[in-house]
Image (cartoon, rainbow, N blue to C red; front, side, top):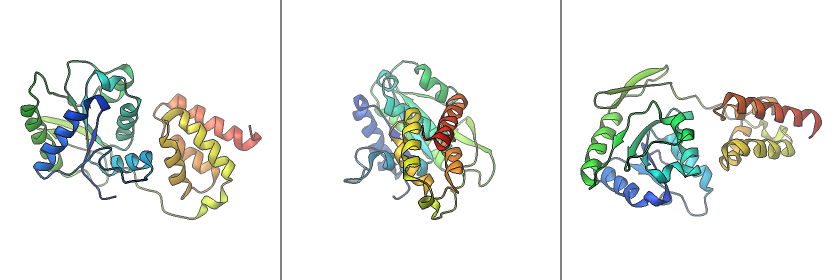
Length: 237
């Protein structure tokens, strides 16, 4: 998948403004990834989204009352924050995020895109995205760079991918299926792709459990996941 610097996240109800944003950004030479347009035929939808978010530098979130009701959008935002991808909410309605989204968005810079028409707001969004992409991300350590003119955010350096290997064959397939089931209870269908990818380089089942646990934001939920998987290794239950 070719890396595209902007991932556009939206609820299906907001498809029209989302694709309006894509059209405006791409007309200005800024490549975007947006579903379903950029999901390859017969591809694993969840895997495509995970890879596109990981490759992006900024997620433009079309935010409305529908966003609060969309589990898919929440998972995409959660994934972006986890991968240290900057999130720029583009608020098309005067509503506040639900508690589950507020946890991820409370420290983000917001752009209000009301009252209509949206076109002048698209222009302002384009300026902010261009300004953000013109900066260099910190190469190795945590650093600060502008999210938009006059606003500064701090983001940790992206985590380095694990070295590739062939140890996946050493992990019992039954263990992999159970880890996927346990992880899906916390992050949804993305678990299937994450388990498959992590298993390709994990140095055994215990290391895989720890690596997968890092995908869960809540420390309490992470501990529950790790304990459940370790119990399954010990007892098979």
